[in-house]
Image 1: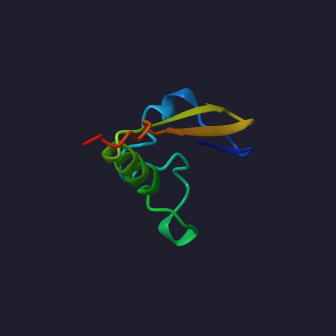
Image 2: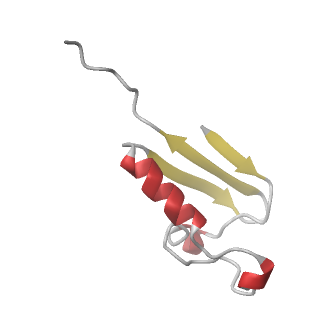
Length: 78
């Protein structure tokens, strides 16, 4: 699954940190304006618990694509 936006994009320096808890790319944002810096950290943890991976491709002033991949479920045969 891919989720895409056409927003500000994320710099290469910030891309390495966006999955860290409480990290916010926009340092000017306050909690009153929204965001705690937890969303991507929680998403990564949930996806990882199901054996998946989450990654991002982004270019400043162009936008971002977040890709979520899960393994194929194959039930055990009895």
